[in-house]
Image (cartoon, rainbow, N blue to C red; front, side, top):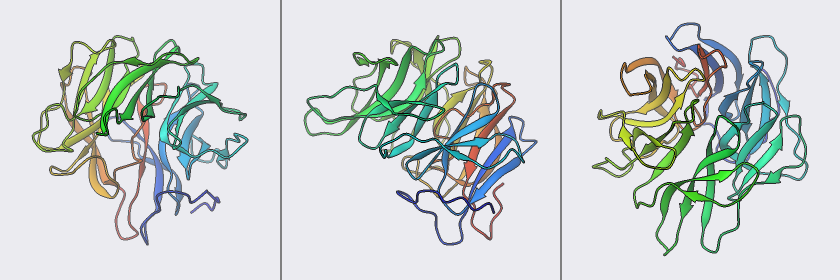
Length: 305
C-alpha cells in the first residue's frame, strides 16, 4: 500500500477497510488497481489527454497517473484552504477543474493549481450547488441544488454559464433529482431521479432534452440506480446499481456497475464489489471510451471484485 498523507477531513473508512482506485474495460476485463490507501478517496475524472485521473481526498483535489507505475499522486494546490466534495468535472481542453465546495458554491480551479474562481451565485434563500456536468463546448455547467424556498428541502436541476452568470432552472418538483450530465453531442442530459419511485430514496436513471423537456426513463428494475455516465463517443453508459431497498446512494454497500446503451437498451453487469458513495459520482470514462475508473472500498477479508 502506497503511503500518501491525505487530508482525513470528512468521511472515514471502517476499521480494516481500504480504498482502491481501479480502471476496467467496459466489458469487465482488464481490471487494474492503480492505487490503494487507508484514506477515503473518491470520484475519479479521467483527463482528456488520457494521462491522469482527478480524485477527491479529504476535501482536496489530487492528480493520479492513469497507468500503473506512473509515479505518485500530486495534490493540486489551490491557495486558501477549500473543502471540495466529490462533485467535479473537467473542461473539454483539460485545463480547468470545476468543483463543488461544501460551502455550497462551485469553483473553477486551474488543473496546474492556483486560486479558485467562484462560478456560482448568492441566493436570498438556501441554494446549495452540487456540480455534475459540463456541456461539450465547455460553456455551460449542469448541477443540482438543494433548495429550501419555504423551509422544505427540494433537490432540483439547473444550469449555469461556466464563466459565471444566471442560473437556469430545468426542474421544479418536490422529488429529488441528481447527477445531471450532458451527452457528448449536447442533445441530452442524463440524470437520476425519484420521479418514478414508490418508496422514498428509490432512484432510477433518466434522460431529458437540455431544456428539461422530453423526459425518458431508462432503468425500470427493483434495484436503486444512480449516476448514468455517458462515454465520450456517446455509445455507452455506465451507472451504479444498489440493492433493492437502499435509500439514496450511501457508502459501504454491495453494488454493481452496469452497462447500457444511451437509450437504455443492452443492460448488463460489468463488475460487483463493496462500495457506493464515492465510487462513481462523476463521469470517469477514458477518452478512448473503452475503459473507465472507479473506487472500491473492500474490507480486508473481502475482494474488491
